[in-house]
Length: 419
Image 1: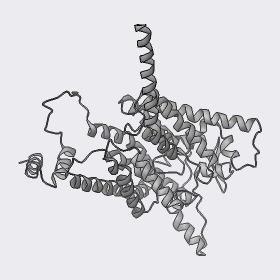
Image 2 (image 1 turned 180 degrees about the vertical axis):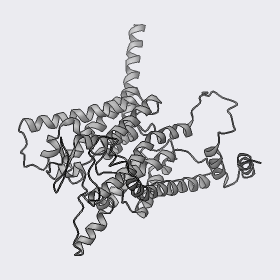
Image 3 (image 1 turned 90 degrees about the vertical axis):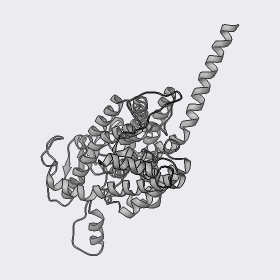
Image 4 (image 1 turned 45 degrees about the vertical axis):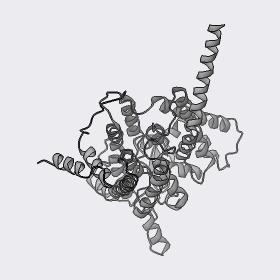
């Protein structure tokens, strides 16, 4: 008897009992469901929720692998053990075994804790409520490690995952019923509960916190500069230039930011891989191209408005808002987490707008508000996750007015025909 037959036998044995959802989940995860629809109207299609989730995970894997290499690269670069990347995306200085080992050691535990704790909560709720375990957390479990700093304590991540799954999803009824993106709910909890671990210049490079503590304790060590481009710009530093310089005053080139050779959350740094992931989601019809395009347009327009304000001289160069306002509008898309948020989180089919016109409005406001928050919140110069959570709340309202507008147009046409 094979494994499939044994699991199916266990499934039948525990059918109707308390632990049935757990065995059903394992069986469904490993094999195709052996049940078919026999009555009622239904759609025959090759895809299901599990395949949809797996497709999104495939689009995220390049960001995860790159994030592992980048975690090791930033660590060794900050310690002065290697030279900065001198070539393009395939530079030999970046894709080394040493970088991968550090990245695996630091990033893999984040993935394990995210999936372990999140799925455990899902199983507990499924057993208590007596419903099937849903595959919705498969993507959330991959997103969470990619949107946090590399040195996030594992216990802290576990607490945030429990909060995000319970408060962000299960209390609303589980997958498909939540009004907030669970991964961003987890990120928001971490930011507001443990702000010092989510911002500053010591959390984005592995080992920076320990080195900072040693320096504070009197040890004669050089400090690690691990601030993000946005963090540097918010402090008025020229940290993004046409050419890179990794001397005492660290600057990063446009190519560094586009390829992802910069400090930041694990999976958010490489704009080129995020772009490829977005194209893959559009090609597979999983992600909404309307939301992606409109969000980019919203960000660019807000960036152009700020550029116009600085060019007109309406704000002093000494202002704490000037540096991010003066940043060329298109550069906003390659720094920070806005590209990752637009592609992988704003397009969440559960929490986003459902109507086509609503998707244009929803996406545009996400991009517009993201840059607005980024500029006017220099203490934490990133606004995409707050903008997406805000628009998650307003998505049903947007759809309501879009539908009502369509109804009024049809009623008007009906009156004209019957007149």
